[in-house]
Image (cartoon, rainbow, N blue to C red):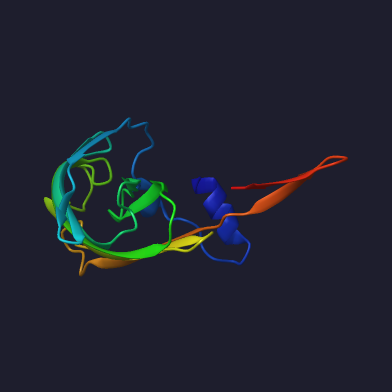
Length: 189
């Protein structure tokens, strides 16, 4: 990749990677990882709260404690999975019906080890990380959308401030026709 990037920089005349940059990169490697999350959803009137605890081992070793609060019926009784970086939950197995849901969440993680901050690196990782997130789910008759915004705290000593990350997902249902001599059949996905 170093050679590819250096050659790509030569096209517009930009200097390639310097020796110091190449020497301070994260080493190549295969890092099998395991993530385990345990949580349970509780009803609070018309809202739902889902506290959870998560453990990760592999590329990073950490323990995370969190909760998500959902207002609205979208997502209820569905299978939602968590996006690794932002912590946003997105719908994978969905129910039918229209509606909306607004989600608030946050978590704190204690980080034990990370291949992204090796011991030989001049950068020291923070021992804890915080994420705060908000999101909006919309489900129409045939289409669905999600937008979320997540704030991530500083991940290493010397990082001046946290960062915001936006998440967007758009689901389309479409139909197609199969024709035979006497019938036209429509299938929707």
